[in-house]
Length: 76
Image (tube, helix red, strand yellow):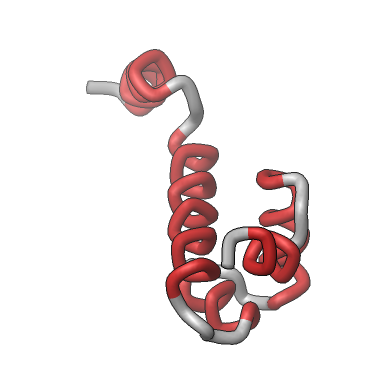
């Protein structure tokens, strides 16, 4: 199977590219950790694969429409 066929099939099945699917899964995990733990936001970002807290905060806000801290407060 070619890479092109695999990526096209993945997009058809999941409605997103492999990278987008992975990013969403990481941010879903981060949302769960924000609600279920008292870990600092920087640790959660690191746990889900972001090298810096600012990159994590930017990605989370772009995806969820709010910052990780505000998300945690709203779901506590």
